[in-house]
Every structure is written in C-alpha cells, then in structure tokens.
Image (cartoon, rainbow, N blue to C red):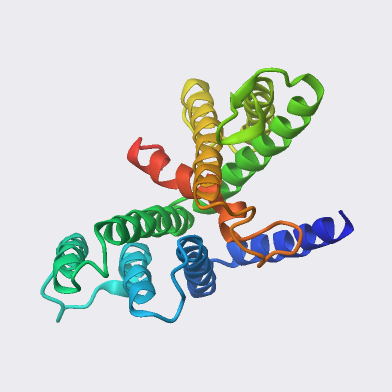
Length: 263
C-alpha cells in the first residue's frame, strides 16, 4: 500500500506538472505514454516489441496519434485517414502473402488496438491545445478520478448487485452510481469556480457522459485482460499496474466527448 501511494503521488504530481506546462514537452510525454500503452496491448497478444508485427501496430497507432502540427508533410501523397486505410489493405493482403502466418485475427487485433490507443491519446493531447484546454483537462481528470474513488468506496459500503460479473466481478451497480454521484459533486464544485459551460444542463450532461463512459472504458480494459488472461496490463507503475490500467477511462472518454461536440 505504501508503494502504491508513493508511486501515485510522485507520478500524479509529475504528470499534472507536464499537463500545466503543455507544449512540445506535453506532446512528447503523451507520445511516450501512448507507445507504452500500445506495447502493453501487443504483449497481451504475445507479440514481441521488436518484431515486424509490432512495428506495424506502432506505426498505425502513431499515425492516428501524432497531432496535426507534427504530421503536416507536403511530400506525403495521402491524407492521414487515406494512409491508414491503405495500411489496412496491406495488412489484409499480408494474410495471403504470408500464407496465413499473419492471420486475419492478427490484422484485426492490430487495427483495433491502434485505433483504441491512437485516438484516445490523440484527443487527450488535442483537448489540452484548445481554448480553456487546461481547465477542460483538469475537469475531465477530476471527473474520472472522482468516479473511480466514489465507485470504490460506495461499492465497499453498499455494493450488492454485480455490474458485470463475467468481466469485473468486484464492480457493483451501487458502486457505479456512487462514482457518478461523487463525480457530479466534484465537477459542480469545479464548475462554480471555473464556469466552462454556458448553462448547467450542458455541464451536468458533460459530467454524466465522462463518468459513465469512463466506467465503460474501465470495463473494456478489464475485458481485454480477462480475454488474454493477464492480471495487470504492465508493471510500469509499481503498485498501479501498467499504463492501460491508469489511462483506460481517459482513452475512452476523450474521443467520445469530441464526437459529441463537448470539445
């Protein structure tokens, strides 16, 4: 427990400092974090880091993650989405050219993993760069962390009905509701100080979305680990597991709030 708390305090303080600084340093750190997250996903499928299969996965993820100002290269004859689609076609062709050593399952996993990680961290970086981006990032972090804490303590105190026992046996419906309630309370306090939205209806809708989608993201990562029979996604953070274990909620939240027009 002491190791977990110490790691959380040091890593959390350092990460918040980098978010505040923003700029190239923030972009570089998020690039590194995304790369480690992709490495952890590949490891779940027993794909070694320094192999051609892994490189394809990293390349696709980087293609989706890298922010616009860093990828505006005029000599590339394709848009980002077009190049990504071309790579998918190449991956499918490899299932034939490799005589099924590279399988359809490999291709599907690689594409899905790259989208999951790449877009999750792409929109996390994007949010920091918009107007009031720092406040939005802090609000989202507060909502995600409050949801985790509220779900944990409400689940321990009141938890009876299982939320998704086949994926995460310890999570309960009561815990989930407790997480949502604490997130709205903490988010409302933040909004009283920093009114980021024009009205409270939109603000509450935003808080509900982040809290519920964050919990869904946590369950998705739990489903990954259960499917591949691993306890933690990695051991980068002593006492906390891997990068995916810490960023699973954010990776789901960021693309969704972008698609819904909140940012």
